[in-house]
Length: 174
Image 1 (cartoon, rainbow, N blue to C red):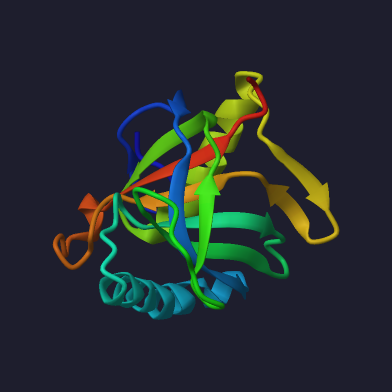
Image 2: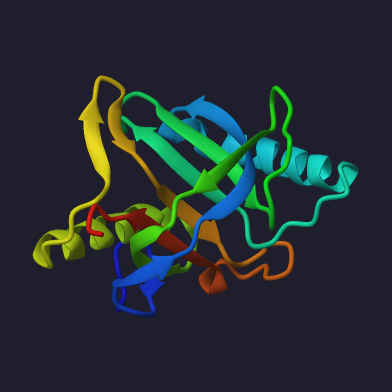
């Protein structure tokens, strides 16, 4: 179904059981306008660190949203899954996406359509009585686990219309 921003959602939102996922990430505080710049900076740095440490990624990179105040700043981690816990550095830190039930939607299309896909997932959750594991704080909405998993490598697939991203929010339901 076409959505605002030119992307297609190739499947309806759904609930998925997901296992805990170890990762390494670079934490950042950015504005919405600065997000693409830190992505372009941090992911190459993170992949270089993994390569230099002899660590293979165990899945596609993702952005974990820790706190969101769209009008001010986002607290995020640019991250790459790894198969087991690893020691980090001051800049590259280990983390874990918690296991649990996630509300997930697959976004297909250019990244600028991700805002619409996130909104669609939130609307679907409200309509289906699904609550997220999040709370309002002075920093904005704080999320226990909210992430965008970048399934398509743009260096391998140059057509933005074919890019796929899984948007996943941990629910508060057990």
